[in-house]
Image 1 (cartoon, rainbow, N blue to C red):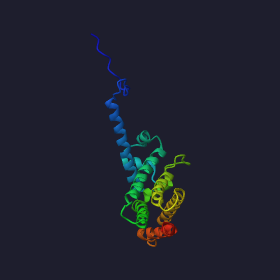
Image 2: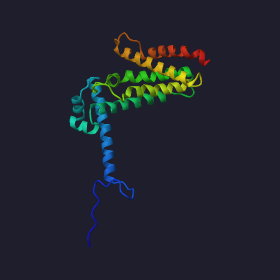
Image 3: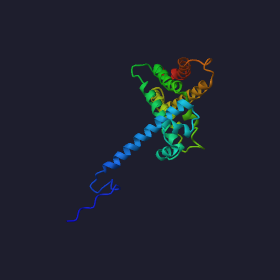
Length: 217
C-alpha cells in the first residue's frame, strides 16, 4: 500500500480552509520580533538621541543591520514602525484625557497637556519622529500628518456642538498646529529659562479657549 505524500510547508492555505500551524506560528514570531526591534530602537533613541544611526540600533538590539532589514525592508520601514508606536501613545493619551464629567474648557486643557506630557517625557523620541533621521528624501506616506490629523479629529469632536463640522475642523487643525509648533519651540529653548509644561499648557488653552468661548456660549 502506497503512503500518502506529506503536505509541503507551502500548503498553508489548503482546500479545506485549514491553516498550517507552522505558518501561523512563524507569522507570530515575526510580529513579536518586530515589536522587540522597535523596543530596542526606542531605547537606542533615548540613549543616543534623535540622530541615532542604524548601527546604534543594531548594537542596542544585539543583532546586525541585516536582521533589521529582514524585518523592516529598509530604514524608512523602521522609522514608520517607531512613528506608529508614538502615534499610538499620543492618540491614546489624548483620548484618555477626555473626561465626560469635565467642562469643555477643562477637557481642552487636558488634551493639550496630554500631547505636551509625552513631548516632555520623551523629547528625543519626539524629535526622532518629527525630524526623520533615518529617512532620506520625502515620504509619500509621511506618518506625522496622520498623528496630527487624529488629534485634530478628536478635538473637532469636542467642538461639534458649538459650530458647524467644517469650522470645528478648521479650529482643531489650527489648535494642533499651534501646539506642535510651540512644543518644538519649547524643546529648543534653554531648560533653565523656558516655562513649565503646566504653564505652557495653560497659556495655549487660554489662547484657544478665548477664541471659541463666545461662540460656545
